[in-house]
Image 1: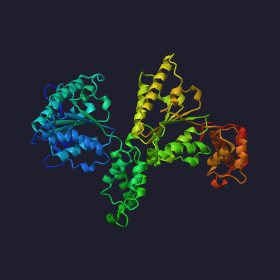
Image 2 (image 1 turned 135 degrees about the vertical axis):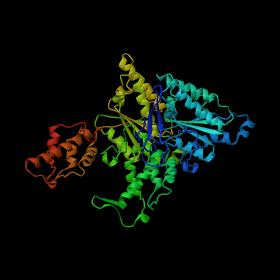
Image 3 (image 1 turned 45 degrees about the vertical axis):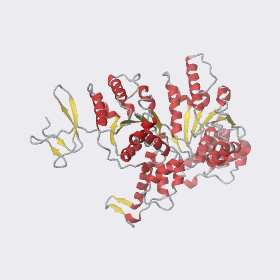
Image 4 (image 1 turned 90 degrees about the vertical axis):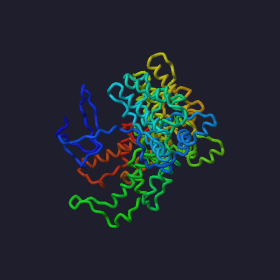
Length: 594
């Protein structure tokens, strides 16, 4: 059957057994080592898979950064009952049977389990949830029973089930019988664990809401411990761990890196350190197509990783928390926003100051607003101001066009809105910007099916806003040019209760807007920005941006018609600006709109 079949250690071989069943076997090793071809003289040794092999993890508690509180909770629930059983018995406390660890990918759930495996030196069984599910009837349940039997025979033991949502989904939501049987078997096995602390089950998942609720009651998973996205202090601790063996240059500032890596989880910070090392490596190694790879002068001994290497790596590594949604690091700052001095000062006071001077705000018992509403005519700079605020503060920026949230399927719109707020919390500190917010929270009259959807969306939005805690570090901004359509509940206290009104620019503001949009462009002698501001009374910032773009296009057109193609030949004159204003062909979607 297998004669002439080439194999190497690690291969998976499919063998058809009697009765038409297929079984997969993994090649654990070969003698001699290396690729072999099976022949008639080849012998096979069948090894029963051992799910209970002790972990060879070299991870210790010192290798876990930024999770001191969470690690302590897990140790109390898992390690203490196994180590100090007599104390639990004297206090009349039943040892927990299970602990569910949940949190976004990369936050350290599996790392905590591996550290417990090493530090406790107890029998530790690691199970990957998806590997439990088998296609033949009864095999999945048998595999689960085998794991629990081994844990009981080698007690005290810990069973760690990674991605437990794969084997214990909500039975009401699954169609297949296999998943339902596996969930029932897991429930029975956990109920069969005697509460002496001999066997403890640790489950890990990214999506706890997908797990069958029967598992999440006391007596099974007695405690649920959330592993959050680390804050700046936690990120600093993680960076110190992953960079402790790296030859860092004296200019490397880990505190600054911790501040600018919003939304990075432990796995992201590990990847960041690796990428910084690769950036440094490129400075020391050059690739020559003819001569091959050659190292630069100095050799390996003098290699150092600089702060610039880390900053380049930050631009390359995308945070896990923000990959599923469009999140950006805004490069726009206040200098790119012409005028709006009062609004800039107000935003600095309510958004930037609390982040920079938390002790002052805590002492005065002042909390920043959860949300701010931008109201004003189209093109007055609302969107641009939101991006500039993110750029000035260094916060992550999530921009949502509210009409795209609506779905024709019942409940999908509300789920999409919930996912957005969930991602914003993971990417915190973060600015969550809803453009055209009147589409989401208009005056609610459920007289038609479409308006019924809008009412449910408004209720969901208000619920998400109300559930934002002061510690969530999510700032919600909404923009509208139709405040008359907004539901009055939006501006109630604790929601978007701070309203900033964006007027059409004054003459001085228009001068600043012209200065922003002509910066770096080849202006001819005699271009008077004050005169241009006087000619554009009543126009918005986006109108002025369009005028500057149209004037530049006219200058380019003249060069092309006259056969001049040198960069120095382009000159934007006052006549071009006057013609662009007179043309009145402004593009409201131009840069600087909002």
